[in-house]
Amino acid sequence: MDILSLELRKIGLTEKEVSVYLAGLELGPSSVQTIASKTGITRPTTYEIIRKLNEKDLFTELFENKRRLFAANPPEKLLNILRIKKRESEEKEREFVRIIAALESKYVKSNGVKEYKEKEGFEALREIISFSSTQDIIIVNPQNIAKEIKTAVFDVKKRLGKINLSEFNSKKISGSLMIFDKTLFFPSGSSSGFLIENPLITSLFKSLLFEIKK
Image (cartoon, rainbow, N blue to C red; front, side, top):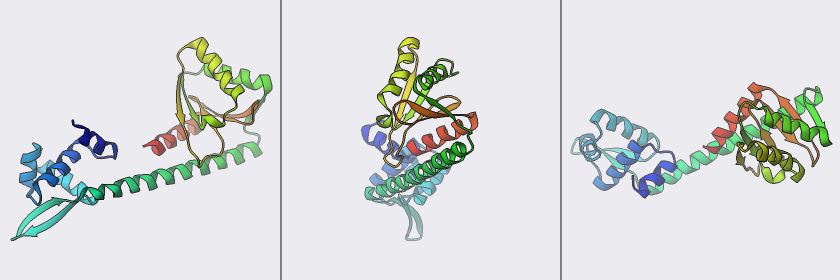
């Protein structure tokens, strides 16, 4: 796959969609059979791909001397895909922020969150990381996390040598968050934080982050 095809894949097109779109640009208005022959993709599959590309405003159906043809729209139409993906990402991020605010409000008011301070807080973090069933840790807005808390994490990383850290930055999320396998940790200042130990809520946060980063 060439560089151009790889770049088109990055904006969400499948490999076959890229092949059909590029063939359409090269051939101009053509029949489904002609495009299928150019790409080496079966005619029924090519037609289905053209239909999907038409929904994305990348292909146009037209008639010429009663012949049904299809033409690839100009590359500038690709910007529409990026705009749509950006809007979807922003909406998912806003939803993520709303959920964080709702959880913080509900659990803090009902004392459903464990609060840790000073040395106890660091020891709680170390224990969670050390006995976690997975060594994958997601950190939201790591730049907002105090040095002391980062040190607590990296101390365990040095000892275990198998922690995988993934960082996610968002200007729309004012605070920070650390996501473990079954636990959420909301740092508060340099020496305290709140823990929510709930696998369902943790799974929800992971899913939302995955959708935002798409």
